[in-house]
Length: 263
Image (cartoon, rainbow, N blue to C red; front, side, top):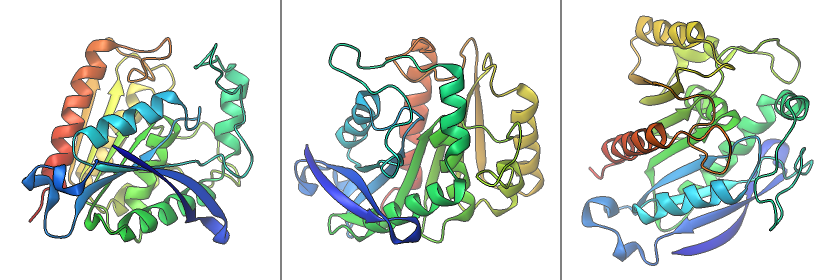
């Protein structure tokens, strides 16, 4: 596996650092993964905790499955807005107030512009097939991945949203549009994972999303994971649920393979 540090051009022309993960060689990928134009690729959108060991591990897992994977740092302008990992404490706890302030303070327009730039950089890489790009996001990143699926001008073959909020508790200049209102514009197949015990995303919000996407005849699947709460995929934090995480990851890989398959 190879790691390359890139600088993408994000919102307002600002540089956004990112790490690109590639198989040791494109030739090492299975024939069905390669295609004539290069590798399928995933834009990985991090949680509020930033580019930490958990996100890096997920990038490595995706790369081991034959995908190129780009992990941009959405906190690069301001710095991480909470306690940073250390060797002694790789996943420090954030207070509820810190979490809310961080998420509410990141302007959607800026983050989506940064992700759009990351998609451009990923699609332009010589070992990547621009027609086989997907995005996978978690928590704050799941919300942004969903919005990207509805707004991106870059081609997206598929998007996976892990417990991304679709209804904001309040709107602001940073969050001027309810994500749910973008459902009509969904431009690619979507897979969503939600925990049935997620206190931050009420079941009625998930139901509203399902009803909107059905009404607009969009291609989607919503999976509700029993006995799992918010952040169930993150094995470094207290919300981890091993059974739900394993099921969701297998479903995610199968979904990505179908929708980024070589023609």
